Length: 325
Ligand SMILES: *[C@@H]1O[C@H](CO)[C@@H](O)[C@H](O)[C@H]1NC(C)=O
Ligand SMILES: *[C@@H]1O[C@H](CO)[C@@H](O)[C@H](O)[C@H]1NC(C)=O
Ligand SMILES: *[C@@H]1O[C@H](CO)[C@@H](O)[C@H](O)[C@H]1NC(C)=O
Ligand SMILES: *[C@@H]1O[C@H](CO)[C@@H](O)[C@H](O)[C@H]1NC(C)=O
Ligand SMILES: *[C@@H]1O[C@H](CO)[C@@H](O)[C@H](O)[C@H]1NC(C)=O
Ligand SMILES: *[C@@H]1O[C@H](CO)[C@@H](O)[C@H](O)[C@H]1NC(C)=O
Ligand SMILES: *[C@@H]1O[C@H](CO)[C@@H](O)[C@H](O)[C@H]1NC(C)=O
Ligand SMILES: *[C@@H]1O[C@H](CO)[C@@H](O)[C@H](O)[C@H]1NC(C)=O
Ligand SMILES: *[C@@H]1O[C@H](CO)[C@@H](O)[C@H](O)[C@H]1NC(C)=O
Ligand SMILES: *[C@@H]1O[C@H](CO)[C@@H](O)[C@H](O)[C@H]1NC(C)=O
Ligand SMILES: *[C@@H]1O[C@H](CO)[C@@H](O)[C@H](O)[C@H]1NC(C)=O
Image (cartoon, rainbow, N blue to C red; front, side, top):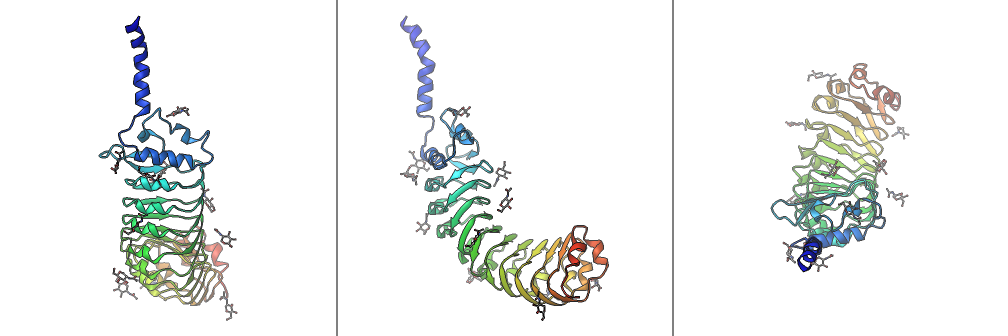
């Protein structure tokens, strides 16, 4: 009788001990459970699967280090409809390289404990309802390569110390309420490929120094209150694919050889500014162009017909709106 009972109980005993102490190190699972607890609509969602029936490295959206088996390196829960806040416990996931919470309904601020994530490379928080400043403690994340904070309600200035995060490739802050000027320190980011500050409240001029960051392929600064001239250096930039400064208060003339040094340019969006002078005929030399918006400025002259052949997308439509001609 007794051995039979033991045999019957054995799987149960093993299961119990397995679920009671399945992990050798509790730091990260505690942080994940705190993350789960700070999500207000977790029931019925993806986080239901974050339970002790599986090891936490197998939980959906979680990835662990192969070398340090119980350390979380990836937390990626995009488009899961998560509401709630980002728990400060996230700062305990000190092996995290990727934090992607894009397209959820998170509110509140980025917790300052994010500064403890010294290995963080990819920070993707676009399309949420986060607010507050870009936290100073983010300065500690010296390996950051991508910062995506677009389509939230962030405010304050774009911090000049971003220019000290030398691995940065992408700074995407579109559709927020950032104020102040574009920090000239960004010119120090030699790996920078893509800045997107579209639709904010930025003012002042475009720092010329950014034009010395030769790895830049996309510069998007549309729908702000930028003034001054467009530094000529931006039109001498063979890597440039997108240059968008539409809907600002920029003035001045365009260099007549504008189209001659932009072999990779696809989109040139300069509409709704106060630009003057003649439309550069050299644009016909920017043969890769898909979209050109020169509308609602004070240009004189008309674009050469050949440009119509370059832009299958929406040139013809936009050219009709090209200011006084
Ligand atoms: C878990 O790991 C972290 C970092 O490796 C360490 O600081 C901490 O002491 C460990 N905790 C336990 C309970 O082993
Ligand atoms: C625990 O997670 C598993 C998937 O890993 C899921 O099938 C199960 O329904 C979850 N249990 C509860 C109580 O939600
Ligand atoms: C997160 O997961 C989504 C969907 O699987 C994927 O498209 C995205 O690239 C991932 N994010 C990162 C930063 O790797
Ligand atoms: C981080 O982990 C430590 C040690 O495990 C714990 O004492 C602390 O409460 C955790 N911090 C947060 C914010 O969860
Ligand atoms: C960031 O680094 C500074 C200086 O090294 C340190 O005082 C601060 O506590 C760090 N912040 C976090 C959140 O770890
Ligand atoms: C992200 O947010 C922007 C602005 O609020 C919105 O236009 C866009 O549709 C959102 N993206 C998705 C995939 O919902
Ligand atoms: C920016 O601020 C204005 C005025 O306070 C507000 O109406 C608008 O919705 C805000 N935009 C974003 C993207 O937060
Ligand atoms: C670039 O970095 C150098 C040294 O790190 C610093 O002296 C300089 O002020 C920075 N440039 C800008 C524009 O911030
Ligand atoms: C354009 O760039 C080339 C080299 O990349 C440089 O020699 C030339 O002086 C630049 N011209 C202007 C007007 O900046
Ligand atoms: C164009 O110039 C006229 C006359 O100088 C001025 O009144 C108007 O505001 C200017 N338009 C734009 C879009 O700058
Ligand atoms: C196009 O480029 C060629 C060679 O660089 C130049 O001679 C020509 O004048 C340019 N065309 C226009 C319309 O500027």
